[in-house]
Image 1 (spheres, one colour):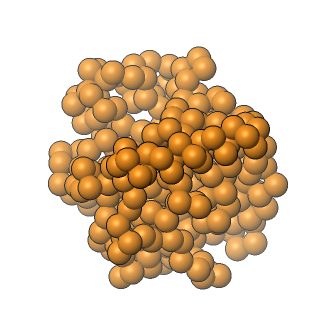
Image 2 (spheres, one colour):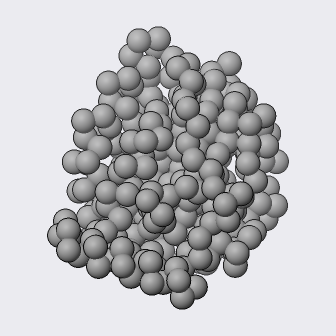
Length: 291
């Protein structure tokens, strides 16, 4: 962990970069925070925590911001992207009183697409991982992908009510067109295996609303975008890279559900912590009910 002096130095750099325009703040009318969580909803979060630095903030300086954000949001489960082994070591400890996780690295010393879940509330009935490739059951890079990509999933059973849902989480490739297209088909096939129970899909899909791979999901007849299903919703970018005005259409993170869930709320959390960006993506969440 960084020393107090090192954190103060980063705070001073952030302030200087805001004043110079190197870091741009979210417009006041687009600052959204977590809403109070109703007792009976299932809150699902998707959060690309960024493997390295964000602006002048190092990954290490952002460790407590990420854990504080997750704990404040109080999700039943959260799908992470870009969780390096170093991030996982920190989060396992920082969230460990409340959360456990499933997931493995996509390759040796690689990133996780892990799912953290409330360990006192849920039991993992089933879980697994597969690669988005021609050989999904072994570590492998698929088609024209720039990176090895993995998908992690878990069936979570409520210990008190016995209700359960499946959570599927991934990070699609930023380069490979075939890799995204075929990877989506693999994930839809996995989701079809659980079409008789509530299912939720979280991801940084690296594609915009309306593009091919987004349409693969929403036109599948299987999964629906909570942004357009929830009566309480917002329309704002999910990727900002510390310059939100330059990323006005950058909606690339999603929470999707099948027809066994209904959505009450969809939210992009732009508020940050103490004036600081938590990541180069905003965390998003949906409050859901099992039908």
